[in-house]
Image (cartoon, rainbow, N blue to C red):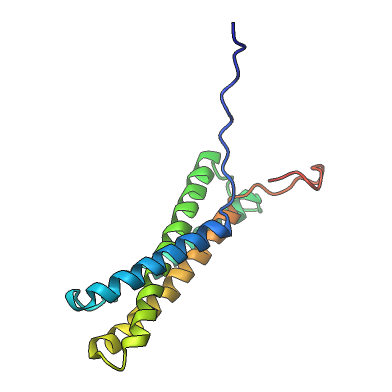
Length: 165
């Protein structure tokens, strides 16, 4: 009879920069190829997604600050539920990957439009939107990474220095 092994313990690791960079690069390359092929068939780039990215970035940054304060149990705050922290960490990981993908899409479009701005009037009009898209997605990415970091449990003074938290 085989020995019964316990199921693996679920863990959540910090987001790897290489994952975000790979997602950004693949999305940028794909967007650059597709926009070059289909640019004449799409409408002008809208500003509304940029507003959404900014609002998400602000919301995640505010949540990161509040979460860190509550995890540190500063005076005047209530402790945060562990399940809520796990959910916020999952949100942060998903937001950082989504922001990297969208930043890549906007970057690919931006590079194409930068090359075409003298030849196409529409490209000159869409260029600020694409550039703003890269910037707002970068802001969302930064806020998501901050939220993910805020969800970490602080080190206890008795923990060994090499213990991962």
